[in-house]
Image 1 (tube, rainbow, N blue to C red):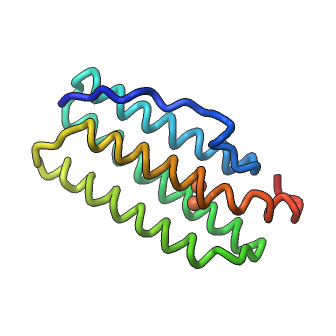
Image 2: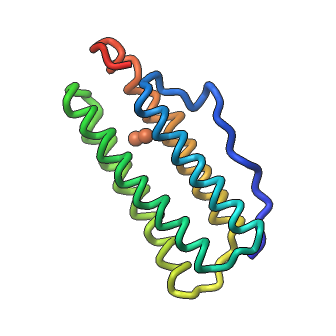
Length: 139
Ligand SMILES: [Fe+2]
Ligand SMILES: [Fe+2]
């Protein structure tokens, strides 16, 4: 397995303006960095698969918690947001399935894909709910 993917760093562009969500996004990024490290160190399929599982579990938890928050605050874009979460989760599960079933997998494209998927979602759709929640006293 080879991987030359730069470390994900937290920056303003990733801030959605809601503390609990920013913290969870931070954990997602830390987990992705961990995955990258496991790949760079050549720690093998088992460990990579373990970190990937953790990323999936945390992603599920995060999506659920974000959707709850949007529902409680009657965010108008919730339905659309939910569909996007489902789509992302299905894609990640598919990648993990391939790793677990012994397919020869290139770590670099996988890491790039994860990195792009998460950052695009956070900097795009997630940032849209920030002002709505802030206006309702959630910050
Ligand atoms: Fe989201
Ligand atoms: Fe999010």
